[in-house]
Image (cartoon, rainbow, N blue to C red):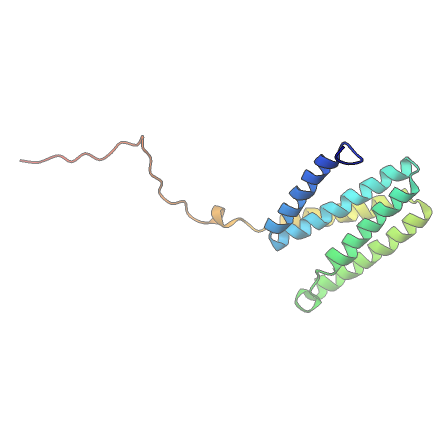
Length: 156
């Protein structure tokens, strides 16, 4: 009635959730989301290899490569990032090449290797997350309706 799959509504809500997350995310969170997307795509590729679903495997690996090349690698600023950015660029290039080989050979070991590299990088990004401003600011005095009020005594 509303589509070819009973899960179209659920996937539409999931897509809206992701889009909302992207719109409201800071640059640091966007990089973390790219890592999560690539890791998820590789997990799907492994499942599709087990299920002998060649087309879906290829799509999942292609998605991971696109995230690595067009997201993570493209976001590097080699002028500002210096040696670290150059090293990450080389690592991302290596990941993409290995995933192409893994796709051609159905090599689960290569997919797991790249997935683990992405997980390590994501953990590093998680560890250097900026501290929200609300946490670093001193809390303001809030009105407490139950707190005792000062009394004013008249002295004679």
